[in-house]
Length: 148
Image 1 (spheres, rainbow, N blue to C red):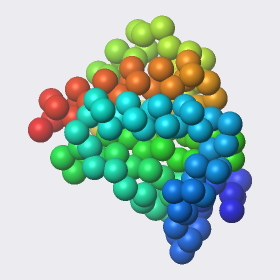
Image 2 (cartoon, helix red, strand yellow; image 1 turned 180 degrees about the vertical axis):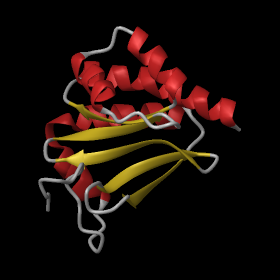
Image 3 (cartoon, rainbow, N blue to C red; image 1 turned 180 degrees about the horizontal axis):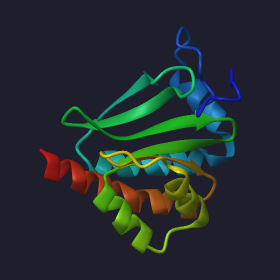
Image 4 (tube, rainbow, N blue to C red; image 1 turned 60 degrees about the vertical axis):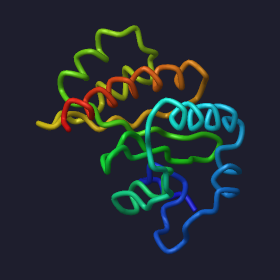
């Protein structure tokens, strides 16, 4: 199931996980997963699908796209999940100015800067992490609005 190099628990492209398998993997953080996915569906116009993202180092994720562009992806892990958000440089500056938790601050610091921004991979371990992600999603959504 999980390889050490994979962001998510489901790294076999030939074996798409079912919703039940995803929810079982998320385990004790299921309430945060459900609250975050409900928040995304309620606040953003997105299409959601389960997609094998970028190869075996990432694996299967619940992807949310807006007008064909990635808003976020949630990678189920054993007993939790990791959220991917791509932020452009100006949004990174805004995020760094926010009072964000340690896991989010570390994800920003670890992410390689590219001309288009940084790919953040944030492990969610608490309600506070999920709240930080809601704040970052607002920055991502604004960046998507500006770029269209």
